[in-house]
Length: 535
Image 1 (cartoon, rainbow, N blue to C red):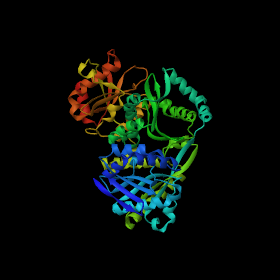
Image 2: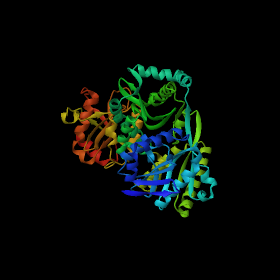
Image 3: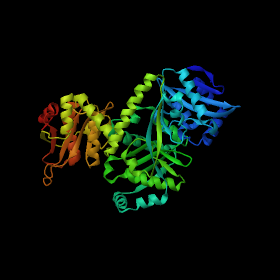
Image 4: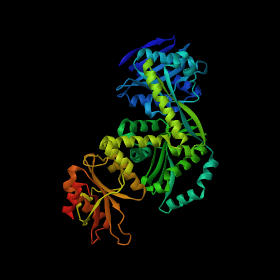
């Protein structure tokens, strides 16, 4: 797509599509961009030429690039990098959700005039589109959005907390030397070599990235029903490219070379930004390696001369616990029609009141929102009556169980395909043939892993075929091995008994003379039929 540049207010130009790519191949322009970026006091790494040009390239199939520039006597005085989604009438700051902060760059003496002219240019070219900037740092000049009568009813603004950590090496050293943290470190070291390190080469970064993606997607799927990397295939490519550009840093915490926690952060100037990815192996959650890694990272960044660690907006409780300072950012919508403004402003007003009420009652807004979404999902799947009853009773309320004794069985066809505690396998769960949703399944799986559970699973054709959890014996003294939390994909039912026999062989070492006790929900007709024939 090629759109001619359109002069607006003299020196302001809007470029769209292929014309943006043409300008980005101009080394003189890129040097001017870099100079403006370095001189702009509210700039973040997400407005740097390295980030924007990389994101435009990686996401060229999903977004049309839009670049607004201003020159005065040939000198670059303003840049607003945007992108229009191909699938909807919305224009975002470049990077969309992959950029934590959206803003424009301009000289100090042109800070208001440029952005007003730039937004007018975009609205003239895209009259039906909403412009969404998420989030604008508080240091960015935005007062005109409320004070200027021409913009007051064209924009909707949400003010959002920005948690920060003032980096001080002594502060983190003190935190790491508390009795509780020394105990955690000692318990981890008793299991082997515990190592914190920064990854500096792309080969090692790529090696760790696959496991980071798995751990990160598993955690977010269990907590929020979201898998950012799996839902966005370009995200991994972007992460690798930004690391090569020097915008990302990775630090890892390993135990016997096994990744137990990590942080990918965006870095620039004297700030570090928690925007890249974080992970924690759920099997070690009882020792909080993620928090331990945070403290080690804070000490490391302070030692590197960074002054602020920006935890970024999001409402996660752990961020409030770690933050030493707070600032504000703004989520801004520029709307095309008055009716759109009224509708959006009314919705934001209601949300603002609700947030105030929840905060006053000591309720975390993000957790409350997650509970509401879970409740709606349950009602959608089971109907209003059964859904509400399920919410009240709780997912683990009184259950009727059936038990069967499965004999260990040498099954070479399955033994080589069975994996233990494989998060990738669990992420391939599909709710077909199951009474639980993916969210419920993964939330339960994370809870089991975090409390010391072990799961055995097998996959085929990108789907989890079967899994079984090693459970606790009904009686602590009888030494009986158990399997519970069974799942079987419908097309795998003919092989499920053999799979369980192979798992029984694995957990018993073939030494159990009485077999392995298998526990299943009494109302699961299909599994009960399989187990009754196999027992």
